[in-house]
Length: 177
Image 1 (tube, helix red, strand yellow):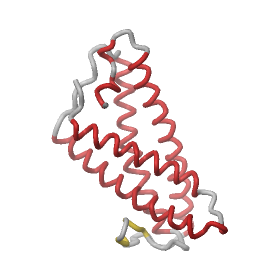
Image 2: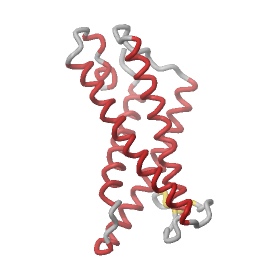
Image 3: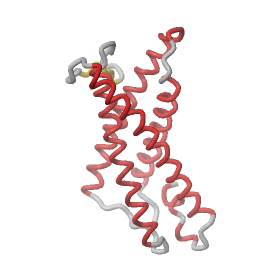
Image 4: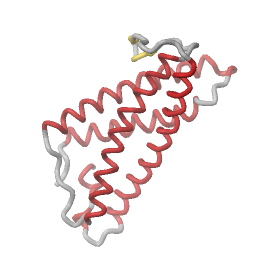
């Protein structure tokens, strides 16, 4: 059974935003003074799309509380079901926690030029504090790498079910396309 079109659209929109955020985040991390103006623009877009993802994820969580999603195919084994459930829980935790850490990081950084959400400036509710910034920065970065690993496992699992399962009813990727 395919997921509803709205869920599929939000899934792929979220995936595109996450891939963009991770790519830009890795690129802009080794800050280069020679490219400061360009990198400041990257930070602006990274913050804006990070907050947009956070809003989308909150919407997804509300949707999941109100409506049930299609069950996994019956041919998926018990351990695979548990792994899929764990992966989805971790995805949601990371998609909530990483943007919050990014906000804390931007808000507490002593040289921060604010927390942007596209054309709005959000209040910085965390006081400027390098110690808080360093902790939030490290957690934001390392959890992003955990997210990358989880994405790789998610994609490989979906491809495995699509191309290598003998039972074609287990094609979880086809349900999301």
